[in-house]
Length: 277
Image (cartoon, rainbow, N blue to C red; front, side, top):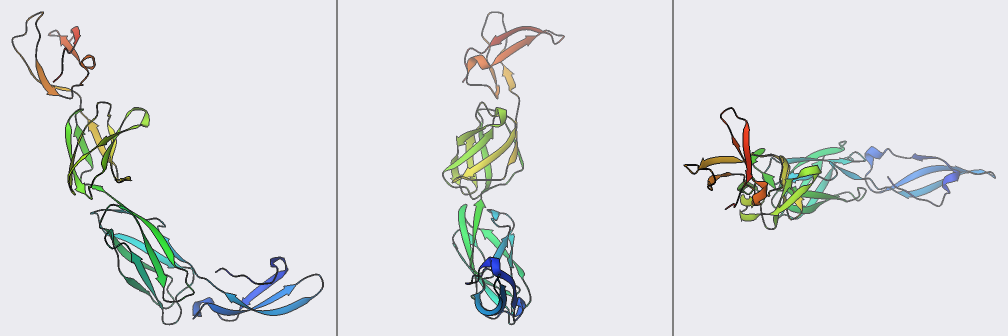
């Protein structure tokens, strides 16, 4: 614990507690201190204030909305005394589900609790002990949105539907881009479990994340499909325009290159699209 006295730290030789820490019943304990300096050695009786700490593992939990219960471990720097101690929990009940209290049995220094996220965002949990010797603890907690799939495939300029939990406005999809960058695209939130977003032209295959109120989801693997031609207007005549339908076309005409091949697969000519609808 933390303690202070009027004895200079450079003169302090030893401090022995009269009773062991495991039997602490209140925050005031008597220590026998032997202090010495160049002139003399003397024994003093000091009244010291001890403060024992509560720790959380992990220190900053990250919950996934709609996911499995999250197990949080609470540890104390001093084992619970005779009769144990009650740890009380306080927090935002609208955003986080947690037990109101948990009992730490005599001699124990750790216990676990289960947490559930009720709403996406940042919140905190305050832990206090029924004994004043234990310092209160405030735990910073993040509740993240959840995407229900682990992989997706799409074409550029497609309207893509995402499903999961914890969706609310504003929601932004973070698409992977070249050189490790991201493209932020605002989503249309239809419900707490469903939204739609348009795949940008400069998106590439990689990790896609959803950000709700600045809280990102876990990544899902996104595959950008190659452009696909479904139909070609017939008959094809030299010098005449042809209409093609498909997916993954760029909205910029010159980015769409059509290659006409001969029967052996060798290119005969390349042309750019005249228009894209």
